[in-house]
Image (cartoon, helix red, strand yellow):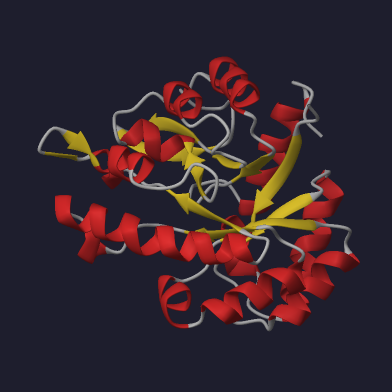
Length: 253
């Protein structure tokens, strides 16, 4: 399977305030070698403009992060936007705080199972992005367990984030394998320690076990590999370039 690298645009959110800034940012990303992107945190730009700018640079939108309220109050608009973008994965960036309880995870799974089913009826799939809080245990069961067990493997997918799995005390490789065929898009993000503080860093510059993680991704059927770094000391574009170059040596394009 071809291993295709993409850039999570949350990484460069501070350089996408206007259509012109986004256009320049995508030019830089394309020149690095990336061919796919995730749209996140730049919904202040109209979707038709987002789609046109991405197409103009030959970049395919493969997944999004959509605000929770839009899934609840404007699902028809979410569906239209994804068809405009040519994007098959409608993603949620995280679990709202009101669901952080044993009962909350069950309620969320029920609510978004129905949303995922409606997306599927319109040719799309739902993809949930984890942080560390899904690895809190409630009555002996992790929040992540509830999301996996109470949702459809066909329609409710996961954009697994390697950094946050590690922070939550999990083994990224093991969770990738557990979610076989449910992770079409993954966030590759590394973790290192500086001055006794854990921070995000570029891929293969930190402490995660990348050969094992990447092997697990192949076994699990991951299609889209998205590079992300929320914050850190390195310039955002330099960070994307370093991660791309490091992974390119391992057969990624």
